[in-house]
Length: 427
Image 1 (cartoon, one colour):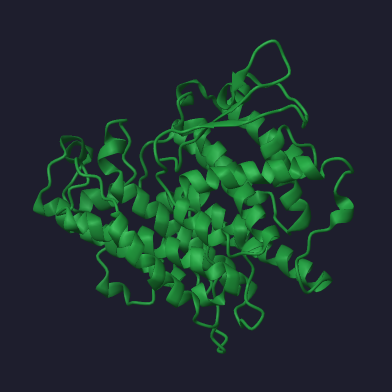
Image 2: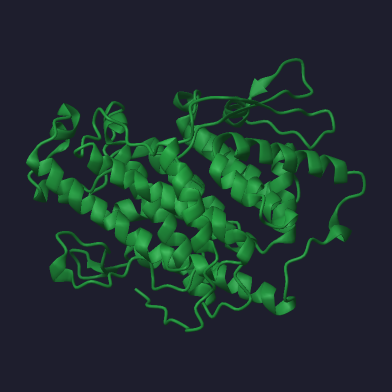
């Protein structure tokens, strides 16, 4: 289940114009041109919030409650194959990426104590174009993530522009498999999109929006791996519509959502007085991404079923006495209610892990992250209010509840980082 929907139409200096998805599907390339223009056509409202959180917390998939209290495993374990070889769990695979990202940030911090834009690296004559590119990214964020956008205005100009650039790239990536041209997207098209990503990181942007991201990765220690992993999640959506267990589902959630947190860690920043380790900061970002994607999945069960997709652990469905047919029939039964209670409980546990670290953020970054967390978690409350009918009723947070949540989030953003250094629990 992909995350967001946005169509970006980009006229090019040829005899005709093609859409964003068409450009990727058909290949081709072009350089940043002062005459290029980008128009954003309003489509269906977003189906996900921007995921970012950085905290001092335990590994996102380690349960703090005893396993006997759970009716399902919140974490996956090391498993053995028939010949006795131990396979690495999805959490361990993701954790290896976390360590790499943390090392990159720590290396950058050893070089300088604060992130500053290096204006000497800006190519002469492109300053105006970069400003326009960032402004367009801001317009997309303002249109499709209003609450988060308002919060980004509290950040320093450099940080908020970088967050906008990352946000837009994620939306465009998701658009490839969840947009109006999704039926025409092939694995080869995603390969071309990944090659284009490598060009962006090499300082060779394809268009103005790419230029914003290219400038961002110059000024912040952002690594390419989470971006590539998100594209891998899009590949999964092309070929996979069932998940045997939570281990498989966890990896998918990391690909399409947890990656966003890892992308944005270097940009959001950690409070100078925080005692959080870099690894724990990345783990909290990962926890929020996983929590939000699990919430997406639970909210959209009925919508996904119409496309023949079931993003729920097959083994847990079977243990609850349910099958795909029960989902396609869309009938709320006691078995379904009990199953949903357990799924919601797991999502909330991930939110709890993520929430612990809001205060570890830099002061200017806490409010938008706190607001995003509070609002998205309320979707789970709405599913319960709908008597677990996520087949025909869409859970959404009303405007009134959103308005109430904003000052609450602001109040929580004033909490200072903990002076106590917490240990990081590894898988």
